[in-house]
Image 1 (cartoon, rainbow, N blue to C red):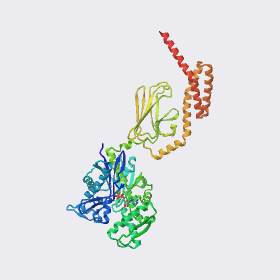
Image 2 (cartoon, protein in one colour):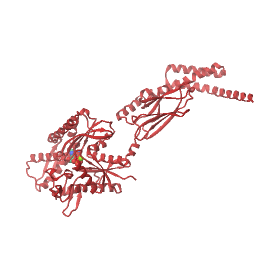
Image 3 (tube, protein in one colour):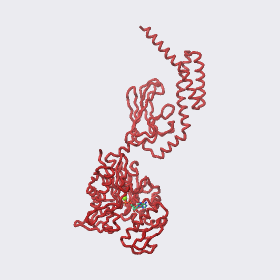
Image 4 (spheres, rainbow, N blue to C red):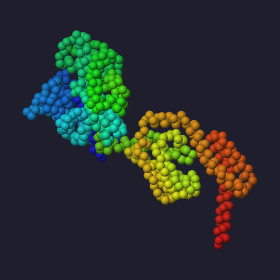
Length: 595
Ligand code: ADP
Ligand code: MG
């Protein structure tokens, strides 16, 4: 058994953990069915600890013992940390910050320990390895401290991964070609960053990253609360009420991502007064506009730093819970002049990407590649311009298939192998993946033997092998992964075209096959008739059948030609058998004469 590697998003506001299970990256839910956990730690007076939602619940009773946003302190010196931290920050003798007697690493380790516990409980086994993500702008000390936090929690940190890179992995952007560029817009609870990545030698490099460590969903919660209190003329709120009101503001904000209105309702928030106030999505958008505007300024700055325009980007992805807000999505779409990819849950993407990275590192994800299938059929062109399928569409890769072919003419010494992809019956309607010539020893028509084999390996590389069977010489041509790397739209277009043309395509194939057969039969039949070896009753039928074939050939319709060819074939069958018998007799006679 390979060691499980966890993928962990250790976020400022929320954290998540995943692993590869049976070849698929999945996030793991806790006992409450939640896949995203608040990055909150409560430390009781006697050193007891609670993590996640349980810790947050204690905020109304003991707000000064609940630590959130510890990521803001990790790997920093006390004089580097920002003023507003929810809980008092002390400074140790060597200038490091400390909260409730613990270092930021130790507090982060509590969160990691909880994630490890959930994963071990879900997977039913001990787990000791993890990939942990950090913002692209984290400096060495912050990365090293994050690694130490993992070690304190009993995890060997096999990789510290940049968050935007993890996001790109989750969105499958690692399959983009060399030099593709991706913007990752990450708006979380308390931080914003925009990173521009470029694919170089198969890995993402950060070209630019810009942001604000004091800009996130929490600000919007505060703006919503301010709006409500201003409207109602409430000017003083104690810290305990504030916790409840902020929680309600957040709930209202989330509701407005899905609905047009929400009611801000907190009964007896200060023991006496209640709040009940309707807020519309329009209200929210007015409140949020300047807040969104601040993120856009950082986006423009990052583009300028990287000397790029929106048109230079190949993809834009959204990460962070706050990108669930429709107005945010719209603003990003407008700025980057393209629809952002929203195919993943934005608040789960980073943990998912870390999980994928872990799966790549321990080989657990190889199975996913094995489950890849050929998006379209692969084959070669044969006589008459027909498509001859060797590997049908939807075949699981890796795979291998082959067929024998022969020469179409006497003395032919080379054959062109034209590799095709597509669902159409005629070669000309499919896509050309490449062609090459193979030589073989001259032989009478239909006597040369040429084996053609297609092989697709686990990386999707197609290799075509052509073997001249008489001399056992092989020609091998590698065609890259074009056979597997086809974009979905092109595949859909090809498949729907094949359905649309199904009747005419099949008719053309039947006609072509019958014509090839007719072209083979007619000269042979004529030669035999000329030799006068045919009985009169046979001659009548053969001549009638021959005439039918010739008429059908000029008419160009598939079914009549096929029927006529079958009739001619049947008419000559007994003749052929008789001729073979006769030849055998003669040979035997000659043999006896030799004695
Ligand atoms: P972080 O990366 O900061 O740890 P997340 O990416 O989980 O955190 O983002 C948390 C933020 O996303 C919070 O401010 C939360 O209110 C916000 N959020 C989550 N879901 C929604 C939603 N449906 N609509 C609006 N905001 C949301
Ligand atoms: Mg985050």
